[in-house]
Image (cartoon, rainbow, N blue to C red):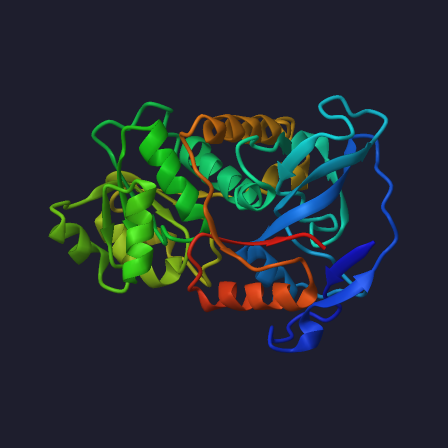
Length: 335
């Protein structure tokens, strides 16, 4: 089968060897596995981080978003059958979606939204799981709740922010404030449903003051947390909550003590990495997102279509992700 992989970590994405086309054997499904014929993928920051930082002794296929058709199933599979259209974000410890066929545990797979084509659906899984878990599991906002409370989303125009803004606006009563630094990304965030947008290239507290908000109850920091950390702490109300998904070099947690602020981490790979008892919650979550999409409540966050799935196009997509200038999700389709 066709696949794209890296064999040496740390190469700049401008190096043709950073990601290469190759042929690999067809994988055989384990007991709870689906073998999926991949039709479309999207690219996430985790793809670039693994390629740059994780050493390998043999070619590694990465990629953690996919849409495809179930081709074969394992002996204990009960949720799907061959021919089903599915979408998922996969497991960081297994070969990824940058291949014609991929194995994935059925418990972290959802049915593809019927109203979306493959490319539009591929934009959703990883970011939808991350945003959903961050909002409802980590920050513990109840669906329909949050009245009188305020959520500041730092980096709202990116992949996770683009779905988090929608979830918070459509499924809660939170006042939603996104941050974005360019006119096009600011318009994007407003169009997704944010009540307000402020410029994160300026002090966050000043931006909040300009829209008449002195402090917020919740912050979702999705990028460059270390750069914004002091301003985030200043912007949070006493007993407020901060959730983050990125990898700050260091974080002074003592800065949270005076206000009794709470800190939450979100990683959508936690359940699959540790095989938690609630692993199938991600299957249920993806099915719920599909229902909301098909009902017109949520929309795809596809930003740009980068063409067919090959090494050259994936290198272009990785380069844009690394530039931190992507709006929405970057999708590739077909081999």
